[in-house]
Length: 261
Image 1 (cartoon, rainbow, N blue to C red):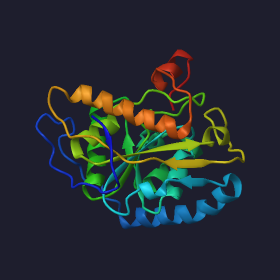
Image 2 (cartoon, helix red, strand yellow):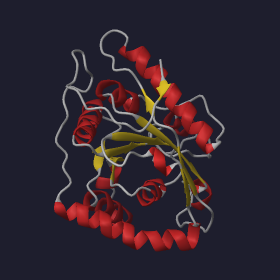
Image 3 (cartoon, rainbow, N blue to C red):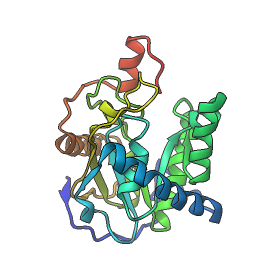
């Protein structure tokens, strides 16, 4: 069902009957967020080079224009920053809603970053709002943008790759947009969940060959989403070299009494 393709990007088509993402919702980065995004890259780039010496492989797999979904493993709060710095094109991320609501200085810093750079908030505890976030993501794709999602839904607590949720597959199956898998290596050692400040280290970002999935709606949508998700996670695992955990990260964290972050 899944085939690898080149970086030629198809045109988006209207949502099909039975679609779980009824219609794209407008999410347009304003001039302030575009300027903030560019400034963020200029400020963070020399810092990242100095402390983490990031190397990037497979950058040619990102199309020079047109929509694409970037799906990667999630090991550290720094993952989004490393992906943004690796790509010449702007990337819009689906960011957990806690970044917009967490109190204190840490919450303020997170809110300023995601709001200033035009990211999309995802409420993981509310299905309706989560679907609205996917609709906003579809809006980014409909305008030819790059959208990044971490399929695990939360950071890995121990460096393993956990089961992926179906949001990436839903978007790919209903829009026809290719999925570019990416494996981040070293970010867990730099800043794992239980550490407040990052340490120096070596970071690698490996973009894989784009994956294309046939559009599908109706009775078989659930099966198609599951199969597509498994293929995406397999590609991410091959790029990152992580051990796989056959459980959702949120459930594993709950079993340990950890708060899902």
